[in-house]
Image (cartoon, rainbow, N blue to C red; front, side, top):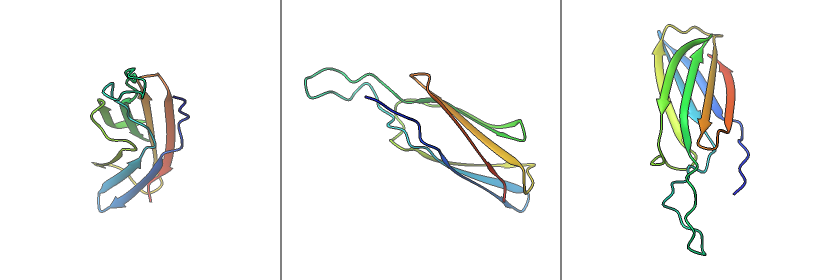
Length: 106
């Protein structure tokens, strides 16, 4: 299966003193429990880690497994951000493909 990482959909909003970040990632998130029609096992292909930074300071680090559904949506919050700060999200999958995207806090 050929997979080309698409840009993530990111949104970061300051609400009071908390920044809320929403992330939508386009990824097949395949477990090794999926079979091809000819009875071969499909190799696992899923996002292993996601890291988020705000102006270079780590605000998110996640380890994931194949149990997360296709095209996952996540949200998280943190304190200490301001309007205009840059949020950078980077993921790495089991095939060592990566994607990095960024947005500004509004």
